[in-house]
Length: 300
Image 1 (cartoon, rainbow, N blue to C red):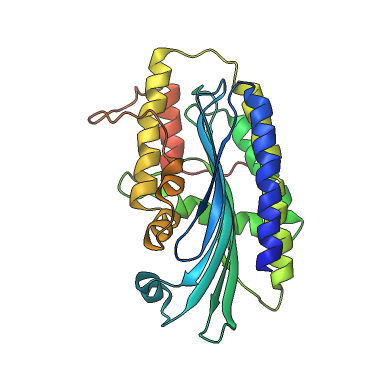
Image 2: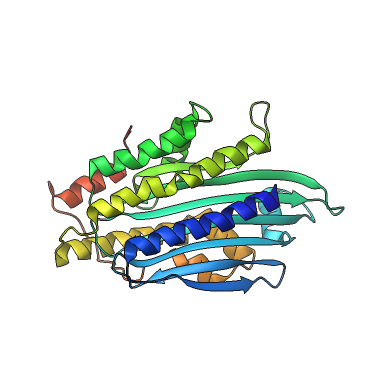
């Protein structure tokens, strides 16, 4: 399974970066192939200062070795080895009318000292963070997510949409990071779902990513915007940074397993503002966005 999924994310990285370069039309992805001293490595691809994407990354990694003590405590195990692979992407467009997007699809195995698999699971999801809210864009993104889920289980979308709203919640701000999407983790073998079934589900979601995001980018990337709207984008990006550094478990896992710091922090946008007690004007589009972020809604 680990080889099968790693091969899948290699191909998916090629597909996604090729399409994003085509859309940008100016910048190209810069590739870094790196090795982790404790075992494994990855392939980081970053695009910067493009016509559409101000900064973005589409990264894959496959790392293995002894599970660090801090993670052993987290998982409640002793002297375990692990293997983890996944694709993680974040795209920060230049135009504030185009939303930021994040996605991640991953696989994890844990072994005893004889090398036997003692646990394994899939995780992942995709979520949208707009700066100006176009309801039809939100509905499109969630519709694609729901379609991918419905192929496998009619309850998956509502379950994983709720988990996404709960996970990407900036508790210290009492608001969501964005308008959600899907979030699933610890997808293990059950009476209803084998690991092959989970593989089919996760890859279906991964394959749906471009369809969920690209039409939104094409529709919004040429819209005009003001300096004030750009400032608002940078203020909201600050909330994105806060979530990733304060709450995100993936960032924590990467730091505690001696992951490659440049790849882990690739998700941070290049230009951000923190303004003291910044409040949008009541009745404005900015105000409407914040209201929705404080009160997540059903989009489909």
